[in-house]
Image 1 (cartoon, rainbow, N blue to C red):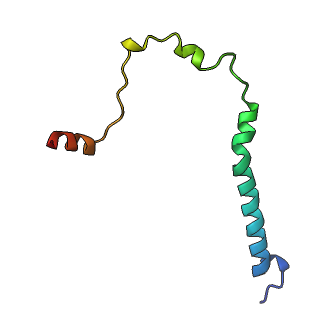
Image 2 (image 1 turned 60 degrees about the vertical axis):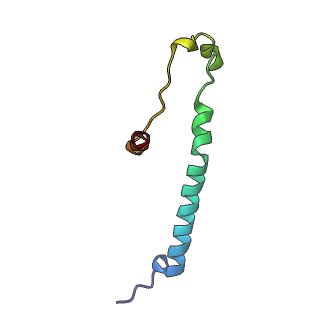
Image 3 (image 1 turned 120 degrees about the vertical axis):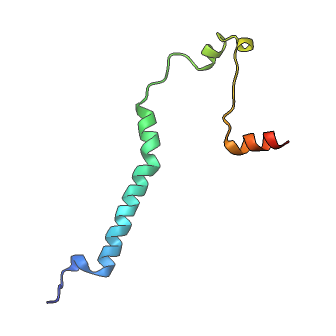
Length: 75
């Protein structure tokens, strides 16, 4: 039995796939802008909090991995 439905032709399938891809691309290309537009701005900027920190009494340890430790120990 031959299916003559225009919905199953290779050309129509490619067109539908391309259309879906374009829809998904448009959605994911704009999702960041869409969500960020809904987030209200904070009442103060981040630098406000930095002025209240005493940096001389703080420490930062950068992440490391086993390879870095092996290199340090081998020297």
